Image (cartoon, rainbow, N blue to C red; front, top):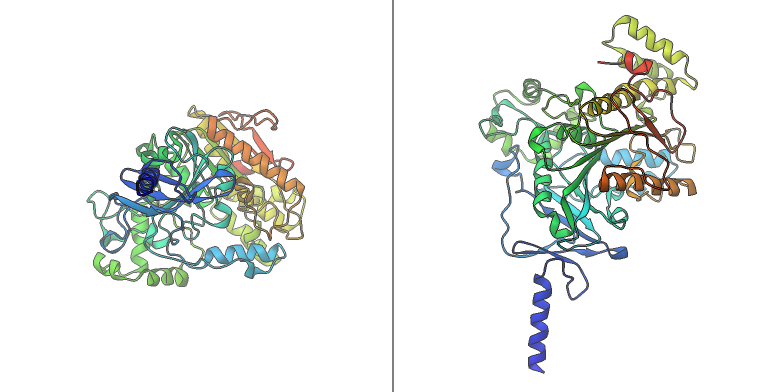
Length: 506
C-alpha cells in the first residue's frame, strides 16, 4: 500500500511539471522554464491563465521608465485571478453606465472597477490547447479608452468564445494617463536611459508582445502567427506599432477598429514636455514626482484633464508594415454630441476650425444635402474627420506600400430607441461574442456576431478574412478602396476619395 502511495505521489509531481498537463483536480497548467502556471478550466475545454506578469512592476524608481524584464524563479504561480487594473479614474464606468442608460437599462448594472494598482503590467490568455506544439494562431487585444481608461479583462474582452474557435487569445494591460504617457523634462529621455520619452504605455505593449513571442508556444500558440487587434486608443497604438521598425517580427498582421488616426492623435517630445511642465512646476525633480502617490496623480487627471486623449510621443503613422484589416463605425461621434441645436452648431464650427474658408463653405453645402437631423449631419462630419477618412487614408497608403488591406464600415444599429446609431465601440461585443445582458439584441445580432468573428478569425489564421459561406470581402488597392459594409447598407462616404474626405484632409 505504501509503495502504491509513493507511485501516485510521483505521478502527481510529474503531472504538475509536464508543460500543458492538467493537474489532478482537472485545472490546467503550463510550464515556463522552471515555473508552473496554474490556470482555470472554462467551458468547452478552453483554459484561461489570468494575471500573468510580463514586466517588473513599474513602481518606485521604475515609475515612468521603460518596462524592465522579469526574472523567472522556480515555483508555482497562481494564474487563476485577474490582476488589478492600471490606475485610472471612473471614466470607464461612466462610459458604460451612460451606454446602459441609453439602452434602457439601470446604469447601476455596470459595477465600478474593483481593484487598481500601479503594479499592473499583466496579461491574460485563453487557449483551447495549452500545450507545446499546437501552433495555433494568436490574437492579441489592446484595449481602448483614450489611453486614460479601460482594462484588459473588461466583460466584453473575455477571450473564451473566440478561443473555442481554435485560436489563442491574449489581452494585455499597459500604463495609462499620466503614468503611461508623460514626459516631464526632469525625467530625462530614452537616450540617456532615464525616461521613456512620453510613451511608457506604448513601450509596455511592446514588452508584452516580446513576452508573447518568447512564451506563447507553451500555451499552444504560434509565435510566428500573431495578430494584434485593438479599438479606439488601442487602435491608435496599433497603428503606431505597425509603423515602427523596432517591432518588426513581433506580429504578422494588424486589426484596427475605430482607431483615432488624425494627426493630433500623436505628439512631439517638446510638446509633451511643455504639457507636463504646465501640469507640474518645471523645477520639480524626478524624485519628487516619483514620491507622489498614484492616487494623487489620478486625482490631478480627474481635476484638470477629464476626457483628455493621452497622445503617445511618436510620428504620425501613415501606413502599416504588415497586412491590415481596418475600419470604423458609421456613427462614431453621435454619442458624444450635444443634445441642443446651439451646441450642435458649435460642435460643427469646431470641426471646421482651421480649414480654409472655401473648404468650410463646401463642407456646409455637403451637409445641407444630407438627409436626417442636425445631429446626423454633425456626426457625419465629426466621424469622417476623426475616424472614417483617416482610416481610409491609412488603408490607401498601406496598399500602396505593397501590403494587403481589408477595409470595413460597421453599420449595425442595435434594436431600441437609444438614438446612438452604430456608436463608437458598438462592434466589440460582436467581435468577442460577449454582449452584455443589458444590450438589446435580436437573432440578427447573433448571426452578425458569428459572421464578424469568422472574418476576424480567418484574417488571423491566413491574412484573408473571406471564406466559403461568408459575403465576399473585396480587397482594397492604392487606387481603389473597396469597403465592406458590415451589418447594414453601405454609406456613401466610404472612400478617401469622396468629396467629404477631400474637404477634411489635414
